[in-house]
Image 1: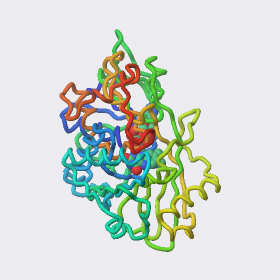
Image 2: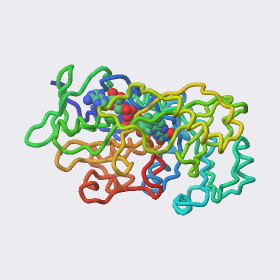
Image 3: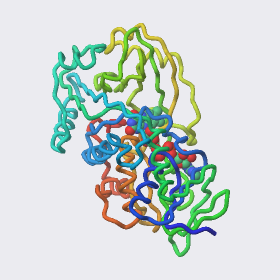
Image 4: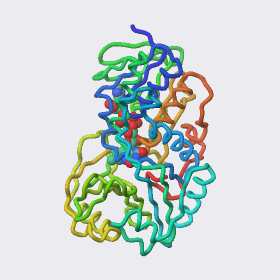
Amino acid sequence: MQSYDAIVIGAGVIGSSVAYHLARLGAGKVLVLDRSQIGSGTSTQSSGILRTHYSVIENVELAQRSWSVFNDFAGYLGDEEASAGLVKCGYLICAPEGPKLEPLRAALAGQVAMGIRVDLIDQAQASALLPIAQFDDAVLMGYEPEAGFADAYLVATGFARAARRQGVKIMEGVNVERLLMDGGRVVGVETNQGTFHSSTVISTQNIWAGDIERWTGVPTPVKAERHAVLALEGPEAYSFQMPVFKDLGSPGMLYCRSYGGNQMLVSEGTVGETLAVPDNEQGDISMDYVVEVGEQVAERFPSFGEAGLASSWTGVYDVTPDWNPVLGRLPDVPGLVVGYGFSGHGFKLSPGVGLVLAQEALGLPTDVSLAPYAHERFRRGQLLTGRYGLGAVS
Ligand SMILES: Cc1cc2nc3c(=O)[nH]c(=O)nc-3n(C[C@H](O)[C@H](O)[C@H](O)COP(=O)(O)OP(=O)(O)OC[C@H]3O[C@@H](n4cnc5c(N)ncnc54)[C@H](O)[C@@H]3O)c2cc1C
């Protein structure tokens, strides 16, 4: 049996970030196991949007720390060839009169209190930033210039490459079949390619986190939820200079961003289709659904009333009851640290989450408190539900 100081299960953006940070903190021998390939889980399906806008203040802090990494990915990794594919186009969020107005006001104030630049802008300023949209109904709008989107696959592979450079071993095509326990604590993992010993295991398995429940008996409050993403080809450009846009006034709480040229990437920020079995294979997207989303888009972007469907795909979220992740140790399973349940917004948190999970695994103080993200919050009824209700804006 081979021995390691820490074993990470999963090499998505979260696991790769954990592995890099373990190495950076001097963890010793680190092994990463993924049954597929680096980034090929749900990370490759990400829309890649980066913002610090959240109504849950703990998330603002994690996103703020993460943004500083995205903003200088090569410098952070010490690899001048590393790229996150960052497009720094800003983030514009708007609410009309109605139930989302006060939550937006409070969330913007929370960001400002954290020292984040957020401009409160009027309809004319919004039109200057995003001239293809109309804002007749908008009562409150916030613009975050230090935001945009990036490429989750590049980030996962960037962290993985940097981790490998520091000596981390990453094995792809290795399925972890169970945790090895001795005296009630974790001592390693059994896989389809043998056993690997470690007294510290970090699970970053996303929609497959239900394995933890099967292995330990500790309930895993997560379900796999499929969401559709559309790329619409409009008559005018949605350029890389135009901000990501969050429309709290639309029935689907739409988010939109440039997809290059005249294309807009758009998806709904509401509840998706729950899957009986976790699976990131492509699902069907009906033409009725495309029309329904297209109508919402045309309300805000009138010229996109003539848009065509350029492409579409589905992706799967690991959704918890409060749409926020579970981070940290499981008290009933000494030696196990978990990071799952990112509920459709884990990419923008991945650098910060990787750091704090690595710190927790090594018994170091964490830069951001993990207490609000504890697994026990569900048992204690102390949920981290955001002011916007259920959804990835959280
Ligand atoms: C459609 C869509 C749009 C999104 N848009 C955004 C966005 O705009 N902004 C944002 O911040 N976030 C977004 N997200 C969320 C974000 O992409 C995810 O939270 C993040 O990529 C999850 O990374 P991960 O490492 O947890 O999971 P994954 O990338 O799924 O990695 C988990 C890995 O674990 C491996 N694994 C699981 N079980 C085992 C086992 N037993 N043995 C070995 N390996 C195992 C899998 O093979 C997989 O590679 C979106 C997600 C989707 C689906």
